[in-house]
Image (cartoon, rainbow, N blue to C red; front, side):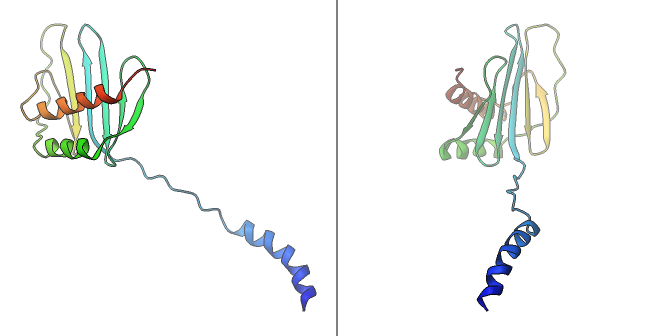
Length: 139
């Protein structure tokens, strides 16, 4: 009885291990909660803040590294509170001139670009700017 176990076991283990596919961790795509871009001006701004649904953010500027940080619970609650009152609306036409900053905000499957911040945008943009200043630091 023991002999068949000794003979059969070394044969079965490799067969069973090759037939079972290794479990691969599936990475769920990150859902974007809100995205802010500030571009233009004589300084050549190109700032971008993306906050994902899990509370983490990706911060980048024209120069320097891209930084990934997670917001504190208080920062995330505050941001979500501001977002409840946000009205995206329509994009504004580009004004005549050269030294204008374009603010592009994407939230809830809507996106618009403006040059003068509407009142509902101001708290969101201000808070995202604070997040950028706090967490983005060049090496």
